[in-house]
Image (cartoon, rainbow, N blue to C red; front, side):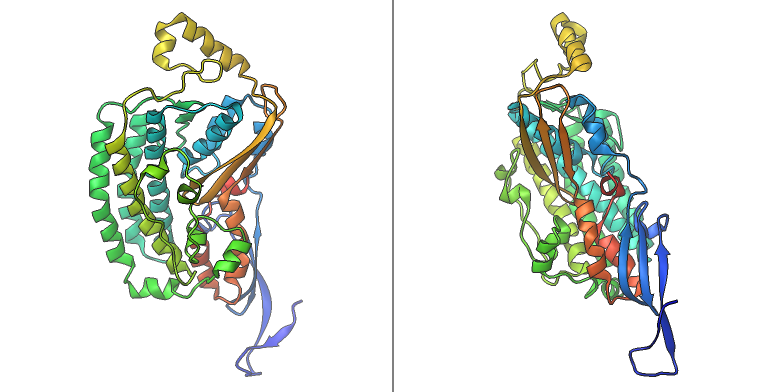
Length: 402
């Protein structure tokens, strides 16, 4: 039995003892199958231990037993709220391994899909955050705009959650007719909708009291904990792979990297809100600059032909069957590629032994790394504040329990 300890105000008539509370793995505010073992002194958190593994599927070992192209759909299931960027990180790592570069139009299409995915992910993050703290209206507004993005993705690939749109050497299809117009309509409308979100939350007294000064992490501690994405930038660290190590064509766009000042939950909220505005700016610029030309690299040895070519060209059909049945053999070597996903840095390390299957795959998933800050961020807070801390980290357990 835990020791009985006088409460902090020195009143020895009121006694409390440390208790252990299991939060999750099906609690609505734990964003999936998160299980927190909370050690409480009264309502104060003494320690918070994340207990992970409820969704473990052995993703990395699965990758090592599949042909390179066959693993792309599995990356959808890591962060299923941002499948596009998960696809992108993996296919870019494989392209680096085999040494191919995709055409300019393909790069722009990838940027458009990735930034729409960032907006979609942040919408759900902020909406669910409001729901967790009692602001139910916002999640309804967020889903309204998220549905518009889902419609755009359905035009691109026919799916609304697990897209499998990026492929090694490009994307599975060019922008369909009408996509550019509907996408422009969305980015024109979206900033006004973000104003509505801010009108509901940013100056709301309850929202401020539940997030200002809660879950503070300094810039130095955030770096030492390995935080990335809005969880890092909320602490004032201006690190964004799109700016600091540009990939695709991000160096051609004018956009800002928002950072916080205090490192609390509110700053992490503001970073996500501003990142949505900036992502819409990037999409607009990408649509303006979109060049003509193919979206896929013309390397039949590694890149599957388009569906149109498969149905009209016998040689393309033969290449298609060969790639599906036997894959390809990259040179012996190892690569690491990382991109700026909505939740932070997602990286893929691949080691090739020259066969059709990778010898080793290691996935650096942002939710997994960010989750280790739950304990230092929660210590000393009230139990109710733990909900705000979890929401501010925006974990998705598909990539925690990979």
